[in-house]
Image 1: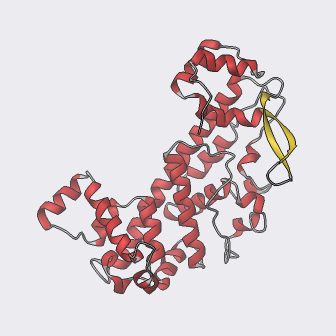
Image 2 (image 1 turned 90 degrees about the vertical axis):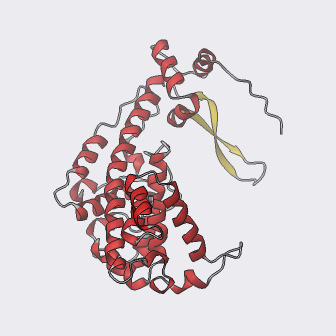
Image 3 (image 1 turned 180 degrees about the horizontal axis):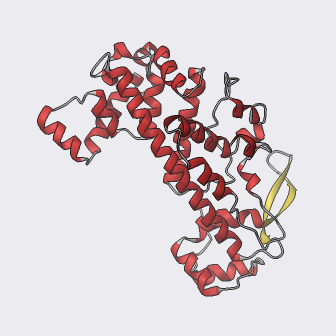
Length: 322
């Protein structure tokens, strides 16, 4: 494969943007952002301001929308910067909620299963039989793969309590110690391995009556967590791992999203799930108020292509229940 695009200095990157119609009112500040944040990270935020044209796809024979190397009239470099800064704060607020949810779920799992078995996370009798029997392509069962992952997470941990427990008691760790070494992905994965009746107990704690739906919620929140942890664009992203809303008739706010595939595909539904779970964990929280206040700060643009905070997937009635 031949790659014919040359390396460009920061001033050359800025000149390229200007040649495509981007207005730069403060070149020193623009160069500073290119040096600190990077051209390609910022490009996710100036992409919506590009011109688009409808072309015939030679491979499919269908009409498709293609971005043109030209910006909409009036587009300024600061339009992208302001969106980037707005999105950064959005991710930080999401991580605040996700931390509370992850920590609470660790306690929920350990308290429920630890009462029956000290090593419930390593005891096949405490888990769903399908994960014990079903083999993967590599010949391992999902349970065997899980045990390896669990051990690796414990070995990688640098926490003092892990070193202390290993030195004093050795391995394996009881479930209430082991869960403190898990990341959100491990929490979500282990929840899916639990017996249905145990999944229902935890789902019901969060007023979700369908265990499978709650399973998809955790998987989607893990997707959100990975986006935020890797500093990826969030505000207008199409969500790849979408949560189910089946069996949520008892949750009033879910009705704003049911049957709205356009909203289910956007990140605000994941933030609404965060709100639902955080307010269950801590009824006096003001997290959702802080997030709503932040949404109201969505930046205005100089570009003729006007973007809106609605691009995050806000239902029209969101403020009535948020």
